[in-house]
Every structure is written in structure tokens, then in C-alpha cells.
Amino acid sequence: MNRRAFLKAIASAAVIPILPILPRRLLASTNFRRRRPSDATWPSQSAWKQLNEAVGGNLIPVDFPLSVLKTDPDGAVAKRLSMILADPYYIGDQPGLTQTLGWVDAWATQPSVYAVAARNAHDIAEAVNFASENDLRLVVKGGGHSYQGTSDAPDSLLIWTRHMDEIAMHPEFVPQGCEHTLQPQPAVTLGAGTIWIQAYDSVTTKGGKYVQGGGCATVGVAGLIQSGGFGSNSKHYGTAAGSLLEAEVVTADGQIRIANACTNPDLFWALKGGGGGTFGVVSKLTLRVHDLPEFFGVANFTVKASSDDAYRRLIREFVSFYHKHLFNDHWGEQTRMGSDNKLVISMVAHGLNLEQVKEAWQPLLDWVARSGSECSIKGRTVFGAIPARHMWDVRWMKEHWPEIAFPNPNGSFLIGLLDYGLLHLIPQPLVDFDSRPGAGPNNVWWKGDGGQVGWFIWGYESLWLPASLLEDGAQQRLADALFAGSRFSDIGLHFNKGLAGSPPDALAWAKDTATNPTVLTAFALAIVADGQGPAYPGMPGHEPSVVEGRKAAERIDRCMNQLRAVTGETGAYVSESNYFEKGFQQAYWGSNYPRLAEIKKKYDPDGLFFVHNGVGSEQWSADGFTKL
Image (cartoon, rainbow, N blue to C red; front, side, top):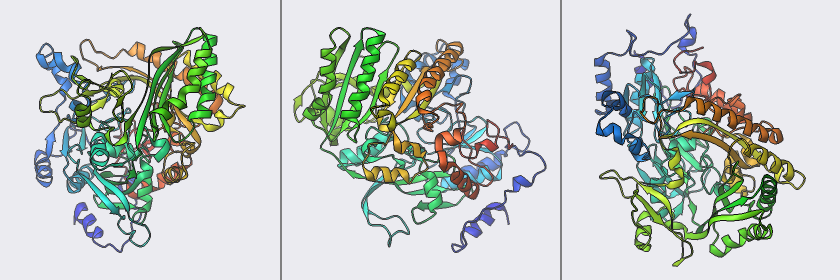
């Protein structure tokens, strides 16, 4: 009996519990190494043909679109490359590309040898079995947004879930096996290849409900949930992982399993924030859905200080203002503090109308007015509210704002925010559209997310900021640290990525995930990052600047050290953190790591699933090919 037949045979005995199996590779006298195409033991063409037949003809050789820079550097495609690399939908449709093209001194996107363009869990299981039996490096990609390149590896087999984008709404959902323990609740089931704009279109625009997902419209559903997952309204609803009710997942033994609170509950918990591509390949996810508020609001403006001393006072005032007026579950998104002595406000509100939005910010505007020449508002002051159901409704935007919803020369659309028919602000460009022929009408992305499409990272770090720093006796220390850090690099404070101030339900759901528990008592996540793009080694005119990148990474680290001086090592968010994160186990998962490590051993004893800085990755070489 071969290994696959054996696994299928034991899987049919449902009464037998899953037990840890001693990995056969640990018995080897030499270090185990996965196979590469240059090895004599690389699968034969007939073996690949059999895999292709097993997955219904969906095995494809992976092309590398950037290779045209060498084969035809002066051709039309090469000349257009920098433009199409700024389109996240184009990148998402290429199995050989990732949304981030690389990181200085860390990695650069490279294609797999073959990809299984999976249509269902059966295709995934066939790919998992083939990789396991042939000792191949396996990677999984849905949205492909990983900054750390976790869905990318040369000489590998790729499981590509892009086409698994089916969506089903459930007015009353009960996880399998939980019929006698859990009450029915509204939910949505999403295929692993679904991106968030598709989820919001179905759940909110068409369904009149809300699902907690990511703020970036083109991020993949599965990857975001497995890493924890924050969106603009996480301060109110909690993390995306906290909304997970059930997952269909293929584990390393090739079995298709259901994971929820009643069936395989340990695997279910690990999938809620334990890191994507680590415990198995998710094929479907079911999330709870929520009632929509009447409005989503927005506040956008910039305050400029005339001197360093004035900027210190501005930051101090903002910290106090935030604590008094915004430290609640209504407000999310971010502010930016930089060396240019500007405080940039880019925040959104849950459940507030236009007057309530304006009222919330009036104390800070009054303080700026009283400051005289020390501080002033630069540019437009934008306050608005939009009926929540139309937040991602592209057709509604075009129909209700005909005079301001039109393509401008660069292909973006100009839209405003509407408060029940009252246009309250000057239109500004908020979204960009996929301009490729035949592109779907909902292929849009927020303009503010455009900078991370096709970029090459110089440095990226994050740090949870504890709510204790908002107490009266600590506000000055926080303000001083923010000012000192801003001398080195811009600091983004993402208030929706810290759950202090959230409602009890949101905190309880988030607590029951693998995410670092520090998030429960953090009021924000500080992010400091820099990069360039589109950029890639060998792209004429768009080569990554290694020298500038190293300098930027040093500035970022010095900036973060100012914040660490007042927070300590509170941890980082796995999806938005340093590729070279020291002690990533503690930083990403805190006290949850030992439990995650045990679950990894149980469901993936041979380490088939490897991602950079993932659970169990310390047992492998940096490229995931050699067991240490």
C-alpha cells in the first residue's frame, strides 16, 4: 500500500482520533532537503502529467511576467510594465507575481515551477499529496499581499486559489457538529480566493449586512483571517479572525477537514491568527455577519506646526484629544506624524452622521485656531458621512454623483461623500479602477492603498501601543516619544489595529484567537515603513535602491527605538512587521506560541507547510528547503 492509499484508508475510519505521527524524516541520518528541478529525483514529466489529470487539467507552468525585461527590454510590453505593475488586479491574475515585489536584502519575487490553479478542495488535496510524496517546496497564494513573501518561492509547487471566489450568504448558520451547542446566526461562506471587495459587494452592497474584513479592497480573505485581520471598523467588530465560525482546510496528510469550535477545535483556533500557509491550505471560510450602521463617516485634514516646539505641543494636544474624544469603538484608521512637522488625519467613523463627525473633531480644530501662528490647517478639511450600504457600491457612486463620478485623464474616478443627498465637501480622488480591457466594473481599489502595489520594501516595522500610555500621567512620555521618533521617519498610528476601547463582544471574540494577547490592551498599532515602486531588480529605470533602502531601514529602526523606550517589547503584527523580526515567536503570538507549536506538530509533523517567520519555521533553513 502506498502512502496516499494508506492515508485515505485511515481517514475512512472516522472513529479513530488524530494522533501525532513520528515524522519519517526525523529518522534520517542526514538533514532532509526538499527537491529542486536540478535534482535527479525531481518528479518526471509523466508524474506531472498524472497530477494534471488528477486536478482536472488545472496544473499550469508558471510564467514570470518580468522576464520580458531581459527577453525584449525595448518592446511595448516592457515599456508598459511599470504602469501595469501599479494595478493590483493585474498582479493578482498572475500566478508568477506577488503584490509586493520584494524587500531590500531579504527577498525578491520569483515564480514557482508549476501551479495548481485550484477550483476546489479536491484539487488542493491532490497538490498537497503530490508535494508531500515528492518532497517538494509548497507555497500557497490567494491575494498574494504578503510583505514578507510568504506566498512566493522559486523551485516550488504553488497552490493558487485565485479562482475559488464563490460566496454564499446564510441567514441562519450553525457550524458542523455544533447543532446542540451553538445558536444559528447570520454568516457568509467565502472561497479561499475571494478578495475583500468581492466580499463587501455581496455582503454589504447586495446583502445589507457587514462582514469584518480588511480595509484594502484587493487583499485576500483567507490570508488576512489566518494572520488575525484588521479593517477600518475593527475597533467596533474586532478582528476578522475573531469572526471565523468554520473553515474547510486541507491538512498535510491530504485530508479535507472541517474546523470549528466543535470539530477539530485546536486546528480551528490555530487558523484564527496563527499565520497563513502554516497549518494547512484553507479552501473555504465562514464568517459571522453583523447589522450595518446607518453611516460610515470620514475625517481628513492636515495640521502644520510652524516650529519643532509647536509640533511637540501639537502632538501632546492630539494625544490628549484622542483620549478624551476618539478613544472608543467609533473611530478607526490612522494619523501620520512626520519630520515635516505635519499631523495628517485620515480617519473613518462607524455609526456617526455628518454632524456627529464634525462635533467629535471640533475641540481639536478650536485648539488649532487658538494657537495663532504656531499651527494651521493646510489644504482641505473634509468631514463627511455616507450611507453604510453604499460604502463599496461602485454603481451607486456613478448613478448618484453623475457630475463628480467620471474618469479623469489618469483613469481614476473622482467621488465625494454624500450625507443623504447633501454634498458637503469638494470631491477628491478616492479610488482607482482596473483599466484593462474587459476588467470587471467593481475592480477598484482605494487610492491610498496604491502605494503598496508593486512596491519594493526598504523597511517595515510595527509595535503595539498599550492603552496605559493614554493615562494622564503617561501622555507626555508618549508625545515626547512620538516627536523624537518623527525626527527619523514618519509614524503611522493605526487606531483600528488596537482593540482597547472595543465592546465586550469584540474583545471576547479576539481573545479566543491566536493573535498576540497584547492587542487586547493596545489602543493602536504604530507602523513605520518606507519603500519604492514599482521596482524590481533588473527593471530598467525601476531598480530598487539598495543603498537608500538600507539607510531607510536604519532610520525606521531608530524611529521605533524611541517608541520601544516607552512601551517595551510589546510585540508586532505578523502581517505588517519586520522581515528580520527578532524573537518573532513572542512578537507575533506572545503566550500563544507554545500552543501553536504543539498544533503544528500534530497536523504537520513533517513541516510540509513552511512560511518565513511562521510557526515551526525555526526548524528550517531560511529558504524552507533544508531541515536544520
